[in-house]
Image (cartoon, rainbow, N blue to C red; front, side, top):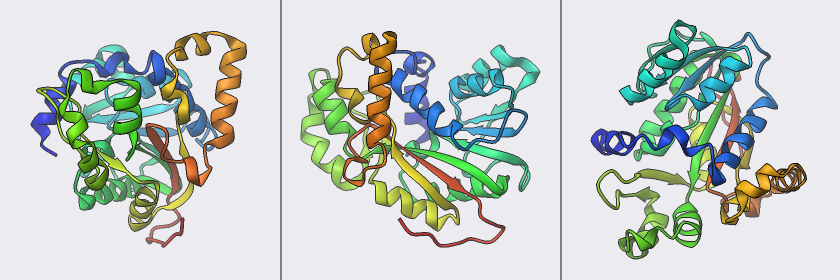
Length: 274
């Protein structure tokens, strides 16, 4: 995936607020919840690789973690430095080749890089780098966009075809190849995963897959998701439902995002099944 296309999209600075409303709000709450199930306690060192403008870095810092932030987009690094100063080690970095020592962190968040690596070798390479820098027994949290997100979330829910009619012509190819091309200047471009494909890539990187879940489930389809999240009772009902079906194999791909929890089992690669 061309770096200039990725930079053109993020230069629009839409990512800073994306997780604060609508289904993005559910994505953030659910991602934090899933990660917290197995994340080491406060004081541990976490590498937020591809951390964007720092929403998850902010959460980790507030919770008492030592955070290393790396992102390919300079404006994102600047935003993290402006907010946290020397409290966070923030720098421009590529998930495929990190400037971190072997076994130097307790956990790695890899919540964005796989979106923008269309070559399988690059995605597995990024996963291997995460495995390299995390200590034996440490955890790597890996997010991916579902193969069916462009059709279900993009077309049915967001109606992106109203502004980019070509989406309707290309969606079959997207589901066949996994690649979302930029539909206009500065548009989002990404690679999308089938659940078994993500599990295979994690296995090939030598990580042991502990769980693979759907993050938002069907919440993307609700036009009143903010109202539901604002109401304590409705929020509880929504989140309980998403938890109940998060790992049902037949439903894994229905939500916009997948989230895998993987562990570095040892210094040697190991095969896993899913």
